[in-house]
Image (cartoon, rainbow, N blue to C red):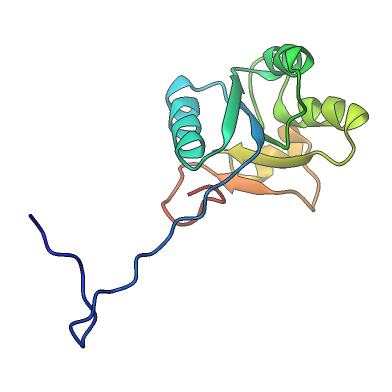
Length: 135
C-alpha cells in the first residue's frame, strides 16, 4: 500500500481538490471518437452532457429537453448544418447561451467555410491536456 504524499517537513501534503463542474452541456461533434472522449471528460468533471452528431440532430435534441442547456460545445464544420449556423439558431431563442467551438481546421478554412467572427471561443483539435477549458 503506497503512503500518502508528504511535504519536506514530513507532514502529509494537502490534497489537490479538483473543481467539479455543474450544468448542462449540449455537445455536437460528427467524429464519434472525439465526441466520446469529450463527453467522457465532461461527464467525469460533473457536467450533464447531451450529445448530437450534427447541427440538425442538435436542434432536435435541444427541442426535446425539459431544462435549458448552459453551454453549447460544437464542432465548426460538420456535414449538414455546421456549428456556426447551429449557434445562430440557438441564440435566436437564447441570446445568453454560451458557446465553445471546436475545430481541427486551420484559421483560413474557418474564415471562409466556418463563418466565425473575431470574438469567439475556439478550442483547437487535437486536444492537449491542460489547454482545454474542460480538463
